[in-house]
Amino acid sequence: GGGGGGGGGVSFAAPIYVETAVVQHSEDSSHHQFPHRHTPTIVHVPPAAHLEAFPPFVTRNKMHIMSNEAKHEESKLWGFETLVSENSSMIDPGMPIQPQWSCLSFLEYARPFQLFEPSHIIPKCPSSCVSLSVDSLIMQGGKQTITVRWRSLPWHWSPYWVGAYLVSDDITRTSPIKFQFVVNSVRGEHKFDMLNMREDIVFYLFKAIGDKAQLVGKSNVVSLERKNQPTQAHLAYTSNPGELLLSWTTGRNFTNQMVQFGPSTSNITAISMASSALLYSSEEMCGGWASGVGFRDPGIRHRAMMKATQGSKDLCYRYGSDDDGWSKIRCISIGRTFPHRQAFSFVVYGDVGQHSNDHTFQHCDCPASKATTASVEREISDISFVLHVGDISYAKGFESEWENFMDQIEEIATQVPYMTAIGNHERDWPNSGSVRGSFDSGGECGVAYNRRFVMPAPSPTLPSFSAFSSSASSDSPWYSFSHPLLHVAVISTEHSLEQQKKWLEEDLRLVDRSVTPWVMVVGHRPMYFTGILPGAADDQQVAQELREAFEPLLMLYKVDVVLAGHHHSYQRTCPIYHGECQKTGDGGYGKLALLYAPCLLPYHPPNSFLLSCTSSSFFPFLAPRPESSSF
Image (cartoon, rainbow, N blue to C red; front, top):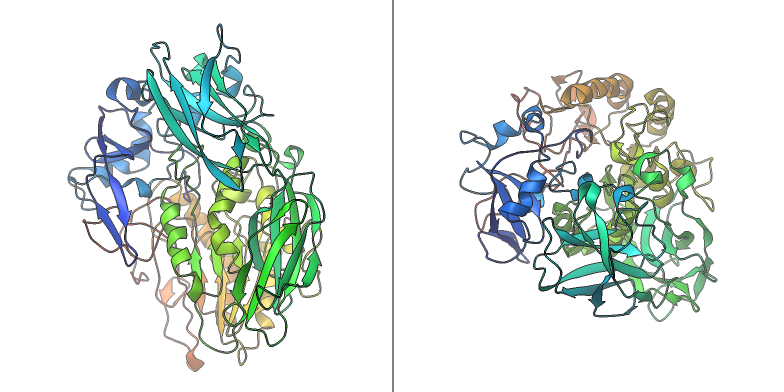
């Protein structure tokens, strides 16, 4: 799955045993302690491979159902035998791979979405429905943990499971937002972390999976107190210096959405009225999960501009309305967000995804993402912006996972601009305009990404944003922005490169290096990388196309750094051109292609420090490093 292309996956058919472990983080470092006899659960497939399962319903007899779905040959194709063999030097065979390093979304038993289709569900209880109880009938605010309880369920040969739905969902057409398996049929409970998705919530109990799933129970409806409460806010730079675009979401029956801002929390008297529109519809999707079982109403998107008062140190703001409710007041540092000619820091990562703290099953779950966003939150006061270089949420057509991702980054993206590049899991879909032609976006074909993340226009002669999208956020998602001392050009590796060459050359030509000495080019797929995992041959072809299209321009205009993601391994090169290391150029401008593909290493001893690269899954070096490698 992951950044390696999204087709295929890792599967096993092997005896299974269960053990529990927990990962604990301290404030000053990441300490990993094993084992710990509480949830979450790791399920081990000998000799040292793993799959991830929550909660600990996963005993031998229950997991046998799922493990039978595994395909022996796929693990060989993915080189996983090499990674986890007893002779592997990659990991300690006595230590399990930690669950944070898994976002292998096509593991059939780790992702029971693969084991049933909503159309196969029998939607009527066999006699009377079992009653599930919930600990709250009113959901307040933007999110809330809801406890669902059951008791005295009849014995059944296959597992019961509880799914969270919106009241308007047709359970025969729509997948659950998330679900959990029943551990104890006599009496038990599950906690669900639920977001305000602008509709009331209901929980259903089912028995069996596959083509025999049947509704057997339901809860009372959990009503939302404020269906139009503003949520999912994030900031972005625009084409105009000193200006920020703020975006957020409400339900359809909103009133007078606006942003109020000013130099302090007690002085937010300036007002910018929002332009509002439906975020997107199922008809705009290209097919697959995005227009089918994964689609839900994404709500209304609101956008408004803010600009700091001249001479002020801070920009404080809130968004919403008197009728629908307001966000809390947040303040950002003007000196940090728009620094003058002085040193500054920013954060770059890619291929992140999302995870819910309740450890429920979702279509694609990336536990490592929580470590990434938590680390950024701790450093937020020291950075100017975040740059996410593609493969954003891994929603791949499941709207609820976009919602979870937007909630997960909100504390970051409301304090610093959150700039993005499009990746294969946002754009690629056959016959939709993507040059790659894979099914990696789940049918979204860039629509969800483009509407959610409005970036600056690719030309200063074009408007920076409109009520619906900017030019950069239509289906031409390449753009640039300048920060004091640094110019960033963002390309799309999923679109025609010929369309972008002329734009990139003009963009780089206009940079005054006496004013802006650093120039960086960013795209999702790398121009150089080493690897032999499945998809590597196709990725090498793409890398060659990227080099042929852009490398002469990078050399001509003395680009300092190229950042990429996609491959889920950390690699970096020497100053490189045409595959060969170069000497640093005159004037201090190196021709450095830095291939940044964030990763987590597969094994850390207890109390070790986590390196500064993070990602949703780990694809190791399984090939000799070339001479151009500097890592």
